Image (tube, rainbow over all chains, first blue to last red; front, side, top):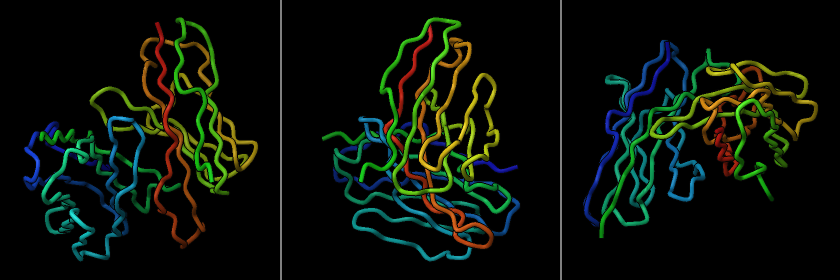
Length: 116
Length: 118
């Protein structure tokens, strides 16, 4: 079975704090992709990053960074120096080789609230 | 470039009514999807299509139907609306080369349709 677990339902931080959103996935496939999407209060889904299972390099994009560890089946997302505009629901998602058609399996989402 | 367009944005249905949620994309993507998002939950796949004339069930297909007569359009049909179908519906599309190609390109989502069944 394939599954994505985001154990943190809600996180609240004060602006400028660093915050890490956890994502743990399950799959038996050796080839798979992991994604993060952001859903701001306006409701749309914004693609943030895609990683394939063969690339465990961490990635940094501005204040965002991602830590992919196959040994623990985790793909965590860190926001450095958080800002109020980062307030959103963040979804981790998995797409695997057996999952024909590029379908994404989503975690439950983590609602991040950044207070001024 | 409009991307993925969903209509309507909001709709209220009475139990037993039917309706079609429209979805169209102008990116020439071959893959299209319908997801539903319930409060506090992630997105669950209803149906998907890998090309015109081909559709398949996702995780929660009961109570819905789809068709894919063109590459651009992927409407979702609710035949007998039930309160359990109150949700936000997202249409998405992606590009795949097929075969051993880049079959897992990022999904592009529409802005969603908020449906209430009372």
